[in-house]
Length: 217
Length: 217
Image 1 (cartoon, rainbow over the protein chains, first blue to last red):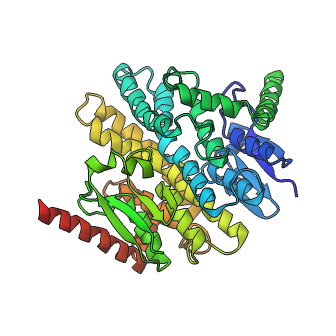
Image 2 (cartoon, one colour):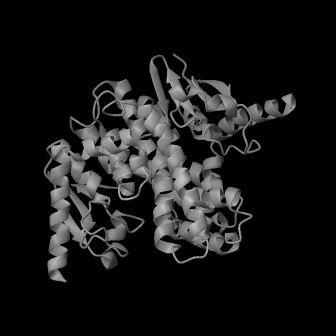
Image 3 (cartoon, each protein chain N blue to C red):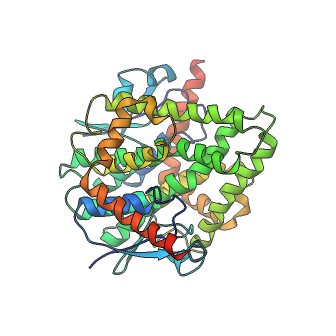
């Protein structure tokens, strides 16, 4: 059965692959699993039936027969657990890859989201100029440690895994700030992720959706 | 082999079980797995050998023979995958429980941590009084949806799972604010989690460590 995911009908990211369907598309491409996409508007996202699938009114969701999942980390985890290619077969290496998946969403992403959120909602506040460097320093503190751990390795563990997929996805959020460039090995790590054929196919697919949304407006 | 985790030698939470060894202890107790604890000081956490185990200089870590893991979500996941009792045997129910694990750490926890962080580092800033209600509203937006989804159910899915363990752990962080009390069913959900015998044993164990740390000072 071909699974169906949801994505923004008109992504607010301008087709840059920053929406959270991107890691799911990428994971599907890595394991050569065809998938369907159902596009939802912002209005639809905040109402049933979408809220039944995604309690927080967000994308993506995953449907396969009776199975309904949400949370991009959990969907990537499910794809990785049910296909070969994204998690090592060795139980210990698999558990380490899952450590990196959680690390991406719960250690690296929160200060990045905090910085993004301030950019959206506090840019006009008096305090923004004073808070911004604080927020960047919090991100730097995490990236410094991540950069030390990565060292000159290609991926976080021996082989590319769902942990790298999630980590590259999270780091892409700061691609257009100066932060990532301060850590040359992380910058190259993200570039290696983006150079994967599966990433390119996923990126092209989400860009097509964005281009279609522009035509309709 | 009995696994070893790390915890704060002197937890800054005053023994309230807010440190991240708490969900690991709780998970071990739920599955009746004995465990060892190695206590680390703040100084030790930021240096090798601890940094080799935990790249970000935090607790907890998990060691079992050659296996070394970090990230509380990943450690709970590993315990749940290798024991009975924290994840359903049914593959679909298991995937749904993992959705809730990721939801706890990547949808519910970030705005809560943001609120906490502001309380620590921005309390003396001119802007704190204006930001604080914004931060609380971001938490409320998430709790409103979570409360709707939980409804009058006992747990997020049919049975208590690692998803509930992680969600209760995250919600406990706002126990002492007025936020949780605004959502009666979430308040009771947290109380149900805390009433589990495994929670009580885990809580007592971390409190003993805290009491010992006080005696030495």
